[in-house]
Length: 121
Image (cartoon, rainbow, N blue to C red; front, side):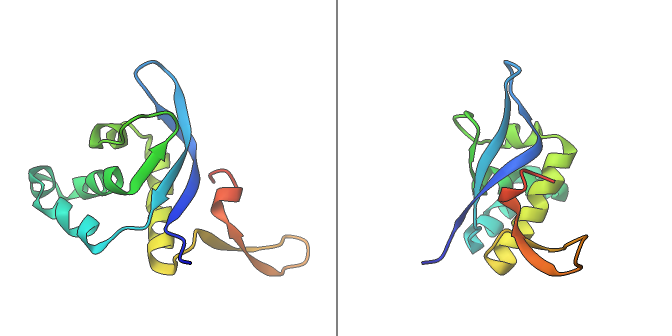
């Protein structure tokens, strides 16, 4: 079975209007449709940098207790969290896994570590 949803923990967390911090979430793999549809959005046409905002509002299926993941929610993320999610998006959509290759500082051996087990950066 193919894994299509991946848990994450944001390094900083989304702070909602009540001051609650939401760090744990789930991102699903993107479809071709997910990547094409935002290109038609007038906000993306006016500012291509907005593409990632619309895309993440589509592929992030859960973020703490936030009921609906909207572009406004994604706009409210800290830059470090957005960078974390961009790295994750690239990993899960190219390799189908959220793993990074790390080197043991003691023995020098390399191993793949699941990023969700690291709790952010």
